[in-house]
Structure formats: C-alpha cells, structure tokens
Length: 410
Image 1 (spheres, rainbow, N blue to C red):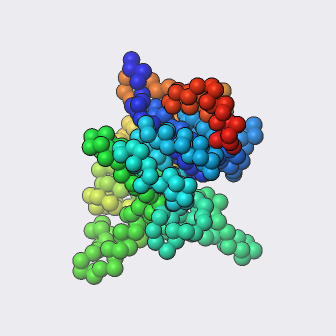
Image 2: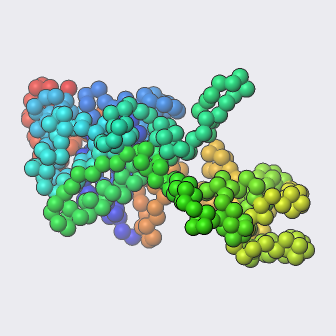
Image 3: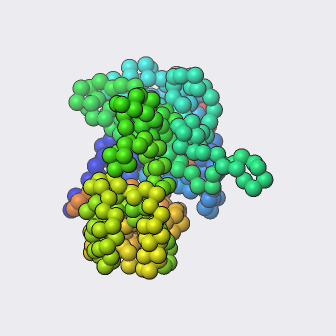
C-alpha cells in the first residue's frame, strides 16, 4: 500500500487571514507542505466565531489542520529576508486576504518571481482585485447576498433579518475553486518553468456556483419564440433551478412515518416503478405523465394520495424500497442529523477530537488502494518557526537565536 500522498513535494507559503485560508487546506489534506506565515500576534481566526473548543475556534482547527505555522515580523528586514528565502523553494504563494497586502510589504508577485520564476502567486479575497467593490471590507455572508443566493426574512415584529439557515457558498466554494486554479498553475509552472499571478473573488465563486439560475434568467430575457420552458410543462417558462418545484408532486418532499423523504420520480420510468412497487398501478394509468421532467405540477388529487402513501412507511423503509424498486427517494436531514445516516458515516467518518482537537470531516477524496493519513492538528502561532528554518533553510540554532533577538519573529 502506497504511503506517498498525492501532493507530497508541493510546498505552499500561505499568508492568510480568517476563512480564506481554506484554499490551502485542500493541499495540506493531500500531503502538501503548507507553511502559514503569521504576524507575531497571529491570525485572529483562533478567536473568531463559534464554537470555541478549549479556547480555540473550530474555524481555525479545521482551516489550518495539516499546516505548519511560522511567526515572522514582515516589517523587519530579517523577517522579509526569511519570507523570500522560503519562497525560493516553494511552488506557490497564497495571499488569502485583501489584494495587495503582500505588495505593500515588498513581497508582491513582481518581486517574488525574480527570486523564483516558477512561483504561482494566488490572491483570494472577498470582491477581487478589480471592480468598484475591490476595496470594500466584507465578511462571508456578503458574497452570498451579493450573488442573489439569500433572501431576507421578516420576523413577527416586522424586523428584517438574516435567515437562520444559510448556504455559505462563497466562503467555501471560493477556496475550492482557488485550489483548483492554484494546482493548475503549479502543474504548468513545473512543465514550463514559468509561474503566474492569479486572483479570485469569493463573491464571483458564489455567483458562478449559481450559474443555472443566473443564466436561466438571462436566457428568459430573449424572445419567447427562442427560449421556452420544458415540453412537459406545455413550454411554460418556469422559475429556474429548483424554484419551480414548489408546485411539484412527483418531485417533492413528503412526510414519512418518522421523518421526511424526497421523492424524485420526474422520469416516467421511475414513476411507473414506484406505482407498481406500492401495488397501485392505477396511479400510473391515470396520470402517466411525460417521459422526462414531469413533476405532475399542481395535481392536487395525486398530491393528497402521495401524502398518505408516504406516511405509511418509515424513512428507512422508503430507502430500502428505493433500491429494490429502482425509484429515486432520498432522506431529508439537517446539518445536525445528517451525520447519523449510515451512508454519511461510511463515506465521511469524522476525524477524532484526540487527533485534531475537534471532530472534523475528512476531505471527500478517496484514493483507491491507499489509506490517507490523518492531518496534523492546526498549529499554535509560530509553533514550527524553528523547525521550518532548520529543515528548509538550514539555519543553525545560533542564527535563529540572533534573529529572535533582532526582532525577526516579533
């Protein structure tokens, strides 16, 4: 069994603040050496949001697992020199904060590429490094409201509020897309010897992941002679994405005897399997529907029938039925209950508190025939300063001591 991880031999120097550091976590999870360079006071991600576990935030424990931390005073000449020396043997530099932060410190791409022509410099920020919003401060939910993913709600007193349940798309998908782009840049740099500078915005990522709805509304701006709805709905232009499912009957959430299930028999073949499986072939005979994308929209009589039918079995019984009768039915959970599902437990077994300081989900990538090691616990501020300087830059203890006295580490 192989013990070499996919990204062993890749080194990333990360300068991050708060959540965008997740861009490098995909790398550290797959074995890359990610060195988080922090100011002497550290990244205040450790105190940000909740839960706080033994004095440290879950946000830090997850975002920086598998990484090493080195504390450098980048306003000190020796601190700057150390940063540049680390870059000389790295594949990439991640600036997961406001664009231009490293440039102001004398560590911009133009400087670093002179040190290492193969360096890939990636900036991940809220609104990106161009456009009218580029200098605006922001937090994660802003990217989803900007992208049209969140609708405000009004409480019983008439106050407008943030919804209780939010998708948190931008702050998660932005780093994921950034990791994909960063890996592409490293791949090309290793082949050509030439690095590049790239930048991504978490707001852009939130909009991009909702491309189906956004592009549908754009398509609907065209003439109805050119852009129609689905034939199953008599070509009616329905709201894009799943918004049109409100009136659906064959594609809808139903209450089971002990919870809820999602019924998805929009294809005629699945609908027929369902009706025959429950011993009610007459339902198919009366309402056969179209071959594809037919949700029996607005069929109140059928809706009432299915409501009672689904109450007759438990969620687990319906899941067994789904497999046996080849008709799509899924359980309906929330973030608290989903981990109790056996499929979840099989595919996403939590890392333990003993390993990482909190129960955490693994990267959902499985290398067939290989067992991926558990990442190391997220580091304390500067925990690996001496280790990194000794191992990578080959500094001796005397030199490290002199640097400490000269304020290189704050």
